[in-house]
Length: 360
Ligand SMILES: Cc1ncc(COP(=O)(O)O)c(C=O)c1O
Image (cartoon, rainbow, N blue to C red; front, side):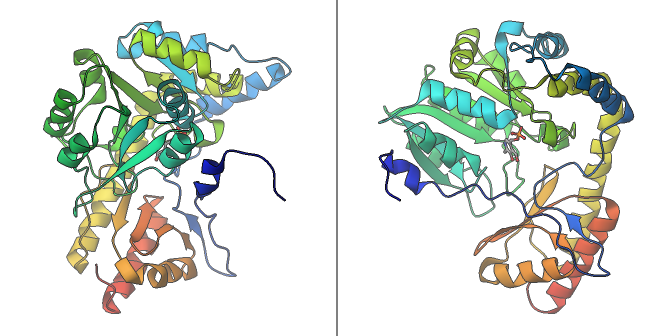
């Protein structure tokens, strides 16, 4: 059917959701394709969710005050500096819609989070994708060189999805020193709780020092609430005010809001899960390197193997073993850290791939 619409929308590749775990008779399967937290919600969180069900005939509080005021206290900023969204994907969308339209450019690393090109094109703006270095890290100098008078936003993804690499403090500061102070720099830190790199940039520190920093965080990953859709941005009050104007009304459900507050209350328990995931990541990547794999130092709850031309063939072997992983052919495969049983299967598959000449 032909119908009148914006032609640039036809250029957007549909967002590919991580595949569900493959099912095969007699094979235990695991979903390692969406960087989710493998643990079920805490009982304390399930309890408040159950209690909130009686209120779902009502709209949620649009300002999300209970979450916003709690976060403000926790991270020591004013409530005017915080905006909620239906996942951090929505706060990033709000920011892009506020800042950029036709003729404006948004600079970001590539490969990176797949939602960026969708959001930018959806706003009618132009993506300027700056290739990662050969090590899978942000090419800060090339990002600086890509900024011009049309640039309305620069996105830093730390750690970067899908390579899991972190952005150094020095690199982030170099970027901020060169971007004009009226151009916003977004630090998308969806996975920061898993980042153990001592040299990493810390977006909240940068927010306190530079006037043009916006930070995006989420409850989806370390807090394990991906299915409830809640994330937030921290930014200058004027920017947050603008984001609120373009936000989808009532996008963050009451269930998500109460679960977020309960998760903040229980963060010690959640943090011990994060530490388990980090320990599993270290165990797995150490073993893979011993097998001869070259893996960029991962700082999130996933890691990257560059299989190149053999990506599709390698992907079939993971699937046959009952593992859903994220395939970016012909570049490589992103694998989320799952429960240790799942990680053991990853190791088995990688061992047999190494024996069969797949080493990256
Ligand atoms: C880099 C990055 N940013 C943001 C998100 C968005 O997460 P959510 O919308 O669930 O908060 C993701 C999710 O995979 C991500 O990988």
